[in-house]
Image 1 (tube, one colour):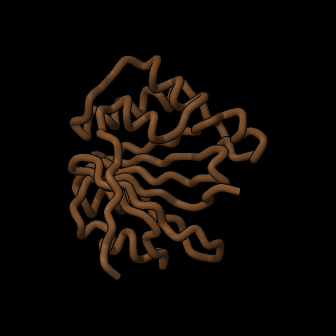
Image 2 (cartoon, helix red, strand yellow):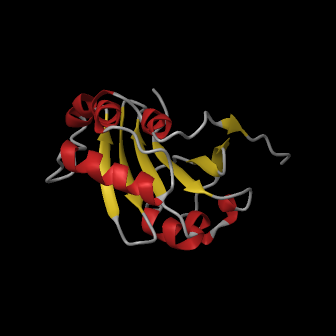
Length: 162
């Protein structure tokens, strides 16, 4: 059984984990990775009544596009992206597995998700690639494949003294 829970990908420094848009959800950060001037945070995946972290709140707080990713047992994931311009989008990773989890959002269309993800990357001033690799990342890949499509470097884990 793999990780289930939320992953946040947002522009920020070491204070991002203390941002109210993260802490308001009552989750501790289990792991944090630096990806250039972006952060990837794996939140405590304990189930309960806590609301999901909001990509819109993160984009507003950081002034930059942000993404939240709900991971289901590391088999599939649904990402929610938002930008300060108000653009929002959602995408599904490992679509076949997501179908088995009944996790495909109503009305989801991969082609629209690809276009919206590319628009989000452009607003984030990330590398914008051709649609093909983005479509492959959604259909058969993982959110980290999408981040690579947009030129974000591999994450380097931060180890903090407790």
